Amino acid sequence: MQTTRFADGTQVAYERRGDGQPLLLLHGGMAPREYWEPVIPHFEGYAAVVPQRRGFGTCPDGPAETSADEVLERETEYVRALADDVDGDPVLFGHSYGALTAIEAATDVAVDAVVAYEPAVLPDDFRRQADLADRMEALVDAGNPDEAIKRYVEMVLHPDGIDDLDAWLAEWPVWPDCVGLAEEVVRMNRSVEQYRLPDHLEVDAPVLVLTGTAGPDFLRTSARDVHDALSHSRLVEFDAIGHGGPSEAPGLIAAEVEAFISGR
Image (cartoon, rainbow, N blue to C red):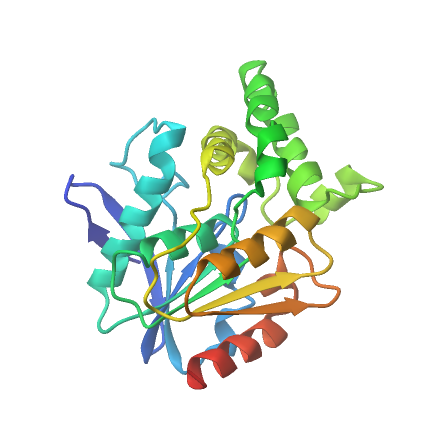
C-alpha cells in the first residue's frame, strides 16, 4: 500500500498495480476497494490505482466525523490529491458515489478521461421524496446498524424487491463487515440527497457515462441527466446489467471503456 498526504496532514492509502497510464478506480457506497478485483485483470495495459475512500477504514488520522455537506468536498479533495500524486494525467473510473466523485473532481484537476458508471445523482422528482438517509439514521440511532444496511440494499441495489434478503446477504462479499460502515453510508446518502445536478458540468476531459437496464430506474435517468450536463460525453446503456455493472460484467464493461479511451 502507498499513501498520499493532504494539506491538513491526513493520509489516504491506495494500492497500485501494473504499469502504464494511471487508472484511478473509485468505489461506491457499500463496496470497498475490493470491489474492483474482477475488473483490474481486464486493464493489463494500465497502472490500476485503487484507493480506500476516507472514512472506509484505512485513514487512521482522518476526521472521526464529517457532516453530509462536507462529504462530497472531502471525496473530491482526495481524488484530486491522488490525480496530482500519480505520474501523468490519469483516467478516473468511478462507480456510483465514486462516479459522482470522479466527475466533480474532474472539474478542477487535469485528467485524461472520466468513466462514470451510474453516478449517484438523484433526479429532482426522486430527490424531493428521498428519505433513505433518515431511515438509516433512525435505525443506527436505535442500535440496529445491520438493519440500516439492509434498507440500503433494498432501496438501492434491489429497488424492485428481493425474495430472500438474508440469502442474498449471505452471498454478498462485504457482508457483515460493511455493517461497521453504516454511519459513513448515512452521511454519504444524505450528501447524495442534498446534491443538485447543475445545468452544466465544467469538465474539459471526455466523459463516458455508463448505465444498465437491470438497475434502479432513477439511476438510469440520472445517467442521462449527467450526460446532458456534460459538453464532451458519450452515454452507453448495457442490457440486463444492474447497478453493480463493473463487477457483474467486467469484461464487457472494460471493453467499452478501452474502446472509448483509445478512440477519443
